[in-house]
Amino acid sequence: IAQIAKPFEHETQMVSQQVERMYQGFQYQDRISQMMTLLHDDIERLQLAMTQKQGAPIDPAQWLARLEAGYVMAEQRHQHGGSVGVSGASGSDDTTFF
Image 1 (tube, rainbow, N blue to C red):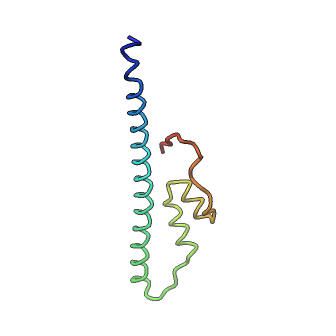
Image 2: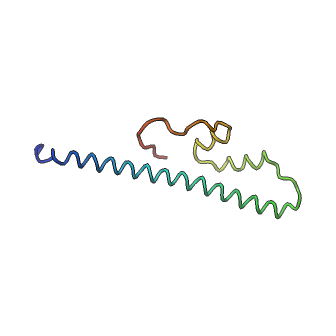
Image 3: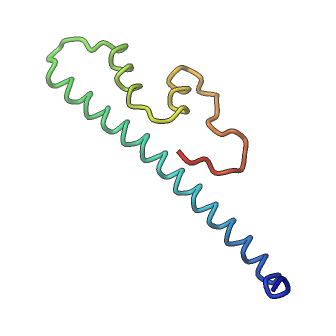
């Protein structure tokens, strides 16, 4: 059985690597989609606030606190706190599921 399986080891490893890359791609797309949806919703909220407030000032601290409450990733919180240079990646090649 080991001799029969041996030729397939390389193909199995290649398929495993391709599946890993697909998962990483899906995860990246999901992260980008979440960030873009949050920003889109916040821009719509700003447009609505500007038409309804009629000159009343918008409190930036409250606005940012509400935006931050919608963050689902630690990377967003780091960047919001002014740590833009901090990477969300751990330097590992392993896929991180969230």
